[in-house]
Amino acid sequence: MTISQDKVVAMHYTVTDPQGNELDTSAGGEPLVFLFGHGSLIPGLEQALAGKAAGDKFKADIPAADAYGERHDALTQAVPKSMFEGMDVAVGMRFRAAGPDGREQSVIVLEVTEDEVVVDGNHPLSGIDLSFDVEVVMVRDATDEELDHGHVHGLDGHAGH
Picture 1 (tube, one colour):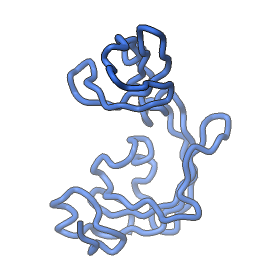
Picture 2 (tube, one colour):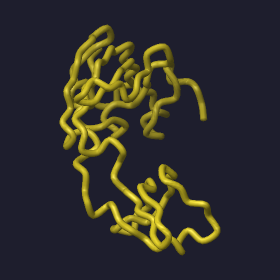
Picture 3 (cartoon, helix red, strand yellow):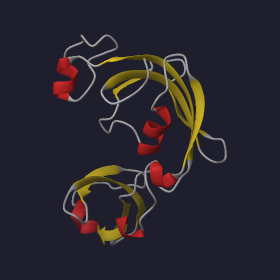
């Protein structure tokens, strides 16, 4: 069975940046299990997986635009420190905040001054080309319940919520 729309896929992966630094891996742990074609993965990796089968091992180089997107300077901004009243704000802290379009997004604190806090709403991996080493462990049909819910219910499809 090959990977296509509405298939459940289990895979092991290791992702690295252009310098070869390991950013994430499932090695030594449970495989990543997801419903293919439902936006669970970055677009470039999903495209690379299409048509693969259990047992396939491959490398996929995904440009930033097909991974977490390019960086957008407009998503980095200085806001008044008074917006964080009563909080001990520090570099590296993460918050949920309204983005420029009004939708909630994650931001990370880049800098704290006496009057301002500089936050970045870009994904931490935006602007970075990624390389994936992938091993497809399993491919199966999704259950009706998984399709109705839009996500996987375990490796066998029977683990409830």
